[in-house]
Figure 1 (tube, rainbow over the protein chains, first blue to last red):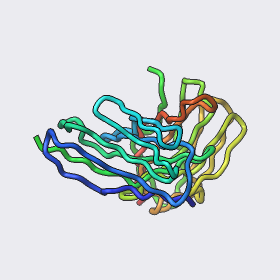
Figure 2 (figure 1 turned 135 degrees about the vertical axis):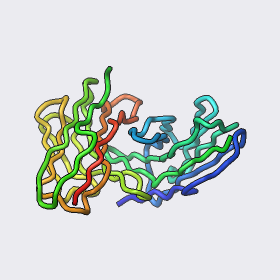
Figure 3 (figure 1 turned 90 degrees about the vertical axis):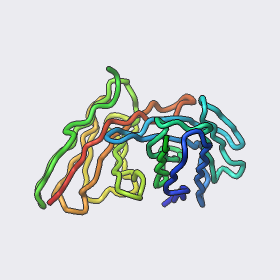
Length: 109
Length: 114
């Protein structure tokens, strides 16, 4: 099946630093999405990208849908303690959505 | 509040027991799905449904059954629990069509099989 490679696996950063994470795939997707999961909860949608090359922002978050349709990145600027959590990329083709393994973000005040 | 409701939140089963994980949504979403989440592996699709009466297998369907008799409910049945099914299970739903493809997730069921 389609595999998503998400990196890095974990990040330990200082409050105020910028963060970058990415996802790559061997398959093409029609939609890329980025989710955040906090302990004891399900993932919550942060950003959805619908076409190749699209760059979308949501506050301090910016994500891009790669031109090849096989990759996407998420940037978080000026991190704050509440950014802590696990960030997942997801690629969707038709009714099939696949998730990356997640990037665990720790922000030190 | 509108959303996806999963019950129970926690469950311990003995090997060989069967049980049903419940999922209900009140957003009139056509599409519902079940994922399992294991450490370091992200979420893997078990089964999904594009509407009442229609179900299909995902990436890891073995050992699980689903049915979709109503738009609102999508229960997941474990036929004979095995330790390998110890995981956190998430139900999710979304509308089909339109430009919004994001899922709404439930808060999960943490299952331990001993």
